[in-house]
Amino acid sequence: MPLFTCKLGTPDGTIVQRELEAVDELQLRAGLEGQGYHIFALQRAGLKLSFNLLQQRGGRIDNRELLAFNQELVVLLKSGMPIVPVLDAILEHRLKAGGALAQVLGQVREDVKGGAALSTAFERHGRLFPPLYLASVRAGERTGEVPQTIRRYIVFLKRAEELRKKLIAALVYPAILVVVAVLAIMLLLIYVVPTFSQVYADAGSQLPLLTRLLINFTGVLRSTVIVWLPLLIAAIVALRSWSRSEGGRQRVDRWKLVFPVLGDLFLGYAVSSFARTLATLLGSGIPIVESLRMSLATLNNRVLEKGMVVAIHQVEEGGRLSVALEQQKLMPPLALRMLGVGEATGSLEEMLSDIAEHLEAQVEERLQMLSTAIEPAVMLIMGLVIGVIIVAMYLPIFKLAGAVGG
Image (cartoon, rainbow, N blue to C red; front, side, top):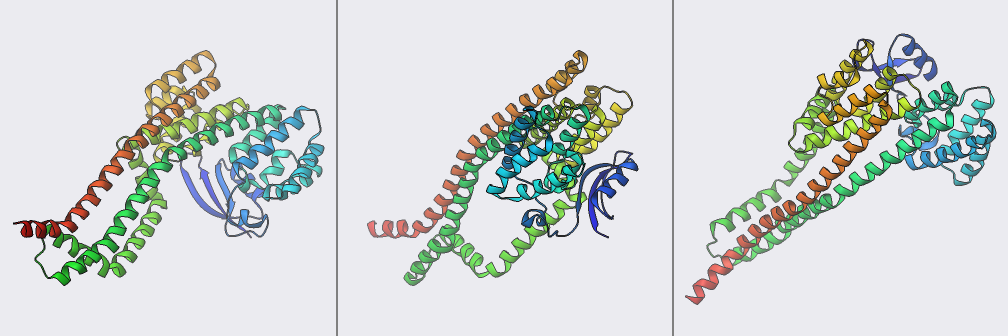
């Protein structure tokens, strides 16, 4: 039987990863949910031969392609067309463009024609669609408001894409500066310094201490490259492997939260994603406890996830969400006050959206300030290092010029 890799939330609130055998994904999903597990991720282990290379790599449909598809879907559903003609119309357009989505939609259409619900048809290809999207479609079918729930998801997706683009844009220039600085310094150490070293060696003159230290360092660097370069690569691979293990992931996630300056940035981004996801699910008509469990994975931090599991238990037992989050220190004070107001006034969904916008604005502002601060810092460090190298290389020339002048 096929082997599936599962990320599950147990009934006692623990998050576990398991590999289980089952006839198919739907049967396994139904069995796990029947045992009280909450499924965060479920995918078949190994490679699949369907859906071309996209599913072989375990990837998902691109957000922009998914966004365009859902915009078409909402427009056609709002016009009153039945679901099968809607899929036919979209598929006719998509087949001309090609891509993985067109292949998936062909099978989705056949499933729907066979009597399956739209959410069930999508879930049969669940690896290709975000869990939040599948939950939104399922909730829309439950309430009879599929276009409205998909429209909420479109808004969510647009906001998430905007924030992602802003984060990337803020980090691109500092990253380029760092790369250029490292390449410039490596060029000086590998090419320029040895050239000067050979000239000075041929001259046979006594070199200043700084020049000798730099030449010796460059010589050791070049002669031991066959040793330190493989060791460096092995260390990076080992570090990546450790950071992906359960213990390493928890340690890294804890460091993220306590790191100066960056800790608030990581927390703000995680909580803003959680708040926006939760608002979208609540707006789709999904009960709060189920919405909280589904939003848990968007934190993408083991430490925050553990605290959120405890908070969810408190909400299950009748506690207020704002009080539970405050006890676990999962939100900034202002966000907690806003959440409390939302609970008191019955506008939790709207307040969660406001919290997400507030935190996203803070993240964007702090990231902009950080990137602005990084630029002069990188330039200063690069200038100092290159300056020391140049001075060290020209000191013998200055010494010789002084001796000649004297």
